[in-house]
Amino acid sequence: MHFRHVFYTIALLFAVGASAFAEDRLAYLNWRNEVRIGWGDQLFESLVWHNPTSITMTMPASVTYEYKERYRHNQHIWAEYQYRFNHWFSLGGMLDVSEVGWDRVTRNGQGVELARNKNNYFYNLAFMPTVRFTYFHHDYVNIYSGLGIGMDINGGTEVDGNGKHTAVGAAVNLTLVGVSANYKRWFCAFDFGGMYALKNANAIYMLKSRMLNFSIGARF
Image 1 (spheres, rainbow, N blue to C red):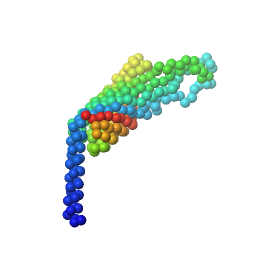
Image 2: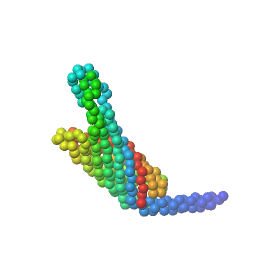
Image 3: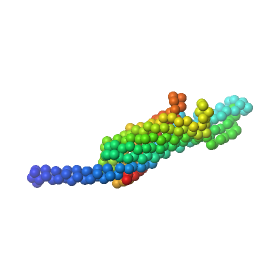
Image 4: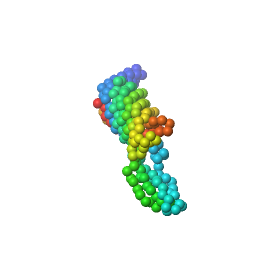
């Protein structure tokens, strides 16, 4: 085959591919609304609130101690809406809820259990506006980063230093990198980042929690 024919063939294939990409991008822009639900880890909570390593068993039986045992980390459940202004910028909002539960156990000095209360817990309810920057777009893969800043409500069965069951503080969610795998309107995504929530330096509710996130969603 003559070199000129090869060149024309390559140019034609390139033009067809560029046209298909443009049509795909146009379709992508037509789906400006996005909703998704996800799951995130509680690595920070599991490191801070965990079962005692040992039980005191050398004191007299008349001495009693109270322990927190059988911690239950219920992970993060969250939902997010995004409105896409163009192929790289979108705004939206997120709602995230997480909870940690435990048993409050009374034992005597020899470790014998005297009483157990299982209904102890705290929760964090965070809501925030979010912004996302998508810097790679393809039919099947998107790569993006994002940021959310809002409020966290911390509550539960315990009281803080002021005797209150509920406290409100600042919350930040950072998505360092996110990758979504797309099939038409549907997608699943993996995000790496972290969520932070605190009232002040002495009341830290989350610090680098929700590092790993998995979600499913749809665009319309």
